[in-house]
Amino acid sequence: MKTIEEYFIHIRQLIQGLPESFPERYEEQILSVTRGSLRIRLRFSDEALLEISEAIVLTAGEPH
Image 1 (cartoon, helix red, strand yellow):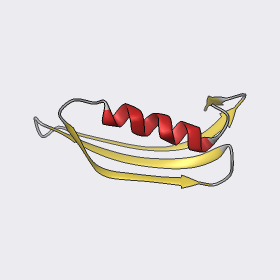
Image 2: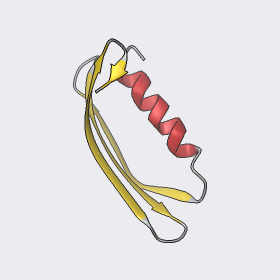
Image 3: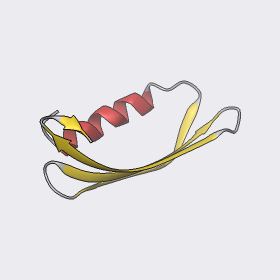
Image 4: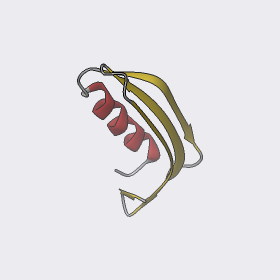
């Protein structure tokens, strides 16, 4: 990945592939070409909840 937008596209594709889950919240913020923040809240069919908040910096094409 060379840009934060590519990273966000990859994450959206991964979420769409999760069985029996529903995204209750998905917020991405692009701060620069290589920096961003992401907040995700996923609800699963068994009522389990997963919430993730991360700040991302791409260095040499890899997220950190």
